[in-house]
Amino acid sequence: MKKLTKALAIILAAALVFSLAACDGLPEKEETSTTAAAGTAPIAKDKIKIGVLHITSIEETSGYTFAHHSGILEMKKNIGLNDDQVIEKDKIDDNDQAATKTAIQEMIDAGCDVIFATSFNYMHTMEEFANDPKYKDIVFSHCSGYKFNDSNFNNYFGRIYESRYLAGIAAGLKAKELGQPLLGFVAAQDVNNSEVTGGINAWALGIQSVYPEALVKVKVTGSWYDPQKEAEAAKALIDAGCFVLGQHSDSDTTQTEAEKAGKFGCGYNSDMTEFAPKGHLCAPIWNWGVYYTEAVQQVINGTWKPVNYYEGMNKGLVDISPINEAVAAKGTAEAIADAKAKIQDGSFFVFTGPLVDNKGNQILAEGKKLTDAQITGGINYYIKGVDLL
Image (cartoon, rainbow, N blue to C red; front, side, top):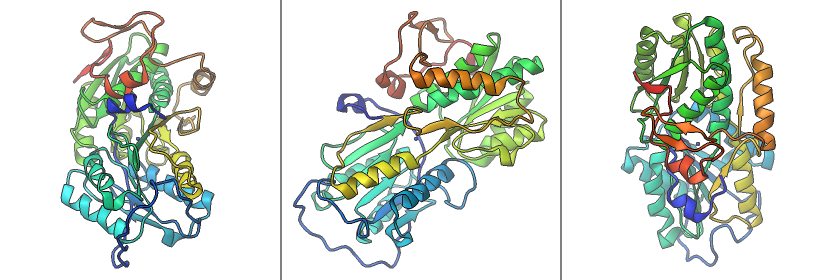
């Protein structure tokens, strides 16, 4: 799931899937006229109420919603909120506009001062509520996407491509150790989704940095969360000869399928080693508590502004899980630590030219870098060495 300028946010097209709250049976919030812009009037810590909208269950023990829910729990602890101050509504299909509207309205009626929505397709419904004059004193914060306003609606995401690159190093070294240059990737969306495709390209660049001959085959499920489709995609990639699998999908199914077949992989969102201890190498992970803590504290202080958020390893928002030394290739931890240090000190940037797509078109000249706007909204191509299965 980048502090951006408003110009950049207009073309921000990241995609992701996220989470929040349950408010049934709570008293309705009285409608009042707004006297101040959202986020500008301080709210006592013991009075603030937070709503969160999740696409899948907060009972999950890995993956996308697990990462967001963990971030909310971290925020509660950091700030010192009581359980009844946070309402999480989960298993709300982001393609079901009626269900999304009902969930948001229930959180409003329960008195929520801030509402976080964690999945890309909640964006349009969030915009409707944010632009309704009745709710101008409520902060609406949406994970990924590109819509916002200048008063009470922003979006937040991060530079997960940094972690993808590091995971690619682990994948490439393992494939090289095996002498198997074909790797696979289970993708939730097709090439037109910049977040997913950018992640694939970053993973491939990490792989190619240690194993230049490697190739990546992509299998698209068309769904952020569908364990059955993820299993089918993983099996298809394995049948095609892929020995190491990456993923941009919400469950740990890709990793468990890889392990069943005696193969290896890099998960996503959270550390998945527990679920595939003999196959999982590492995972690009999110530390969403970094953003949730900052945003809620700003609302409490009365300093929140509708600024789009886009950060990375510099803030600890993204990282890589511990290397599974039991299965990773020798030297993996050291290679990743070296690359991570260069990303953090600014001496290395993942999307730096020369960069060529898989059709032979030059995307970047040597030394040039993709901009934030291009990364979040303009990666609609696979780089050389990456193609659909």
